[in-house]
Image (cartoon, rainbow, N blue to C red; front, side):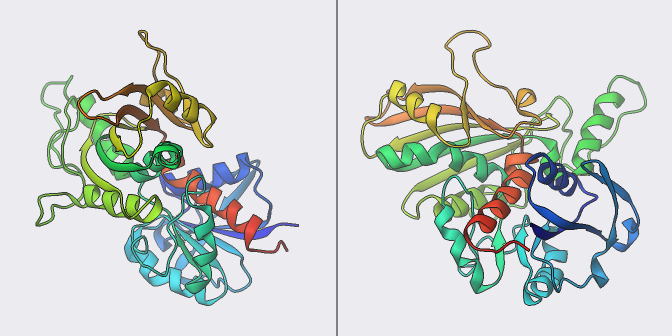
Length: 340
């Protein structure tokens, strides 16, 4: 006995990962359907040893389906998520549309699983921003032990966070730089991304922050603790997959770096790789295809009384998006829904 599952946006990077992870984790599926826009209708995609043909999201009837994983962006979600929810299908949404709605839980299962019960207000659950998800997984066990007062984070975010267009632009620009006369101008990004870094993700706000930076602040407060102070600088880097973060925290109680290592070593969802030697740390390319949030470079910050710094890396298409959505579905099934 299992669930009837919908994956909306199944032809995109995150949608395909959702299907892969549902299969890898042996999620109890009785029936599954892949939905896409009309222009992708009939596209064949893999689900384990099966091949699915996409159906039309616009005409699909969600009645009788249990869970819908949405990876279609905010505009389409605004149209179709309420229809699915009204039909009794619980929506797990990867867009930013519902993350800040007080009636919609924003869930990272390792961090705030008890919030899952709030899904019944709207029949919708929000998946957080990719950079937020990995950070709160790494910081939750430290917060439980020593209470985090302030977080300063700088992100190094891969181009896959900007979708297929971002991946293509990095690839094309890199090739073009080696062939005179075939240089590729910036289109998806505001400046050349190949061999460069861009301190600008999403739109600028009146405060001087970008929307991506604002998201990290607002989402961390909602998921981890509304009292924690957060400031972020979000940077796009020429990496295909895998987000990295340099995180500095100030805690209420003193926590030495060795105890912090011990705590992180046992924390759910965290993999500590931290040897104080060349290569004794994780880099984004090593995180690709992995489930874990990796932590390295744990050390004391001697400039304040109760400070720590650390390095955090994760596959943004997995923990930052598809994996977290599937983990929410698993949590929903174990706590709230009946099979079959």
